[in-house]
Length: 447
Ligand code: UDX
Ligand code: UDX
Image 1: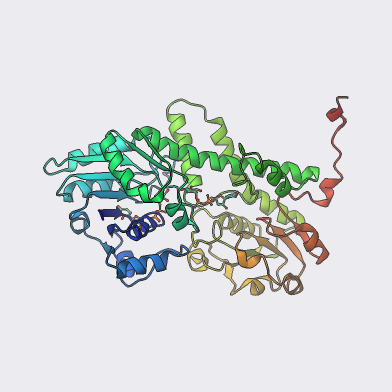
Image 2: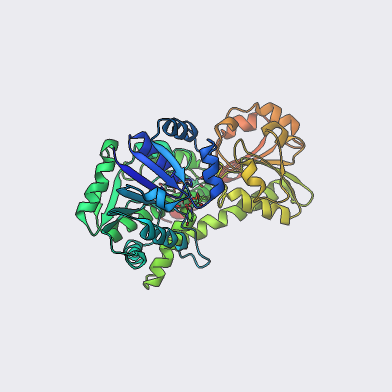
């Protein structure tokens, strides 16, 4: 059993702390937010993540997991400290590392024995070297330490499963010995362990997220072409995915990506490239395609309703994706604001994220469930793919709406079933009826 300290108990840090304690390690997690720590001591979770509450409570009860706001207590007898604080985007896209710096300084000032300092937060290439300088300068007396990059690859909503069954563990360090020590912590996960240098490890994280975001913008552009040519992008994605070089995942067309990672990480990587004089044309296009989708959805609602002024639109789902309460850069926020600016009234329902949503969606009326949301609205937009929406009594939804207009922003329904139910149904890239009439120009057969 080893002693591990985790700094920052957000979506990444709390999952990391709980999982390492569940693997039998002694873990103490620190946060500067006293309310968050006090809540955790009372068994209250600061975030919604399926399975997390039970995991935390069981390991606290077993004495393997505890919480503190004191760096001195947090670092007592620890061999490893994971930095999991936020790395939000600055105004120009560069990652804001003030929290990482604060954590590194506090670690330096409170460590009493040799320590492996591990960056789990997503940090720009070169941050590992920078953290080492901060620790060296801030130490009252020199104590040996090593810096290791161990990027997180956790998807919200499935973060515990992703921690316990990683595709790979990536470790970067100037010290092979330090990397090996951190590798020992991960052996029980029985996944490939990539050991490389600091900058390469940091870049693996950014390149991975940017590639996943590229897949999403790619399939969204294919969806726009499918819509006009009468093809169904869901079938196209399925047909593509059988090719192992393409893969089945991350080919779901929709409202574009949101959340606290892809938007921030693609922007940060483009910023790094630009700083180095690289013309990041692909990364810039990925961002442009993504941000254009939100207005395109509003435009489609405008066309479907013949104008938005005075209309009421119900957003079915608000969180940036299903199985989370996270509203960071959720497409629903921009869509609601644009609809309101066009004179529409917006109503919202989300099984989990409504409390968080209230704080970031001024003027949106919250409904108690999907059926209440649909009452009297001119159109429903499916904005998050929650399972509970997939088997709604759609006839009941249809009958309670002012008119049965439904824009399926996450393609959770079947177009023919919806049309047979009498909905004026639009999906994303589902080859609407008009598109089917589009003729491919004669150039296809060479003349
Ligand atoms: C964030 C980023 O979203 C992710 O890309 C990165 O890989 C890790 O950091 P997340 O867990 O979502 O992940 O951040 P957040 O939910 O904002 O939690 C950060 C926590 O760190 C907060 O609880 C905050 O109070 C705490 N914190 C912040 C500290 O403990 N010390 C600080 O100095 C600053
Ligand atoms: C992502 C990465 O997957 C994870 O490896 C990294 O550590 C953190 O960032 P997360 O942002 O939690 O995880 O969720 P993810 O499931 O990747 O979805 C990201 C966004 O892309 C969401 O807005 C989601 O709706 C969207 N998405 C995802 C699509 O639009 N289509 C898809 O096929 C998949």
